[in-house]
Length: 449
Ligand SMILES: NC(=O)c1ccc[n+]([C@@H]2O[C@H](COP(=O)([O-])OP(=O)(O)OC[C@H]3O[C@@H](n4cnc5c(N)ncnc54)[C@H](O)[C@@H]3O)[C@@H](O)[C@H]2O)c1
Image (cartoon, rainbow, N blue to C red; front, top):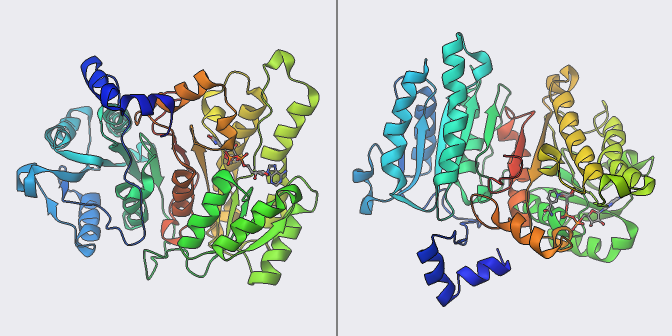
């Protein structure tokens, strides 16, 4: 959040001025550190009966020793760390009023970096049109709450398929915790699957082998660090010319380095052979390597066009043929692709990049319904980062950069670790019900909202 605007409004004079003018003031976000509790305070849990999803969350909170209250007044100091509203029982739009009744009184009592998590059922499984409308309405409500919250608080919606109630834990834990600091206004769909709860939630990837492409720096290096912190052994992949920094990442995470251009015809095979030979197999693949070669379409030459599509998309399709083959990643594995909000909303001067990142979402759509992968319990999801502070965004012109930082509900850029935490969550076996999701890590950016 180190932008010029943030420095200004957090200076002694700027703070006063921002208050008088009603300007947004970015605040430091609560981010996860090992050993941190899920939340720092009481959680308000409410919703109409039968609150099946809420009951499940109540059990999870009880196991974590979190104080659960039914009203703000019951919480110590009249402050709550989070509000969880179970709207799974809504039948028609008139029932939505309950959400207002549960959430509205709590908003002014929410701690900084507080959480609003709304639980609902999948609109696609509704029995009637009115029920589908009410279920879908939760999306509009939750996204709007996200835009009304201040002080680093976020609001997200979890839609649960029939029979998938038992698969909620990993997602609710993520959304309540500091791991989801920059995930705001998102809808996560939880389906059936066979989640495996870890013995230790501080090391949910224990015993797993992961590969991260583009791991020498930026977001990729952060992904490698977070996956390793969560227990995985990490194969760090990057170009030979990035060899020194790649070795640096691999050393820090106690993993191995593999110098490789992901566009090479044999990239998938080399990754798999390396993971097998050095670590005995492969469970998690994170396709993170990516480039930008920005030009307005009228000036976009053949080389810029082809290189971006090749690195960001073509290579993934080719590597997947090997990595997802029968002798590729192990059953129950996880594939996470890095897209971008440019792939959702489009971006001036980024036709090539947006094409590649939208294509990545197409890959997720197709693979997540692939019967062979589903039968093997392999999940496929994407993250779509917004403005993240890296060397890639440092190259963006000043005005566009400041706008990118500010035009989101948290009024600041995200950090590579925010993307990494989201990927680590999507890589958990406890999350086996979450597949086919594209989770934006963008602080609820107005771009592509
Ligand atoms: N920074 C952002 O705000 C942002 C926003 C949306 C999406 N993303 C995406 O996140 C990913 C990481 O971005 P970043 O900001 O860390 O970028 P970065 O440029 O800092 O790092 C990208 C890494 O990928 C490596 N790489 C590039 N081409 C490669 C190839 N052919 N083979 C192997 N490695 C290769 C680079 O050497 C580099 O280490 C990219 O896919 C990017 O498109 C970033």
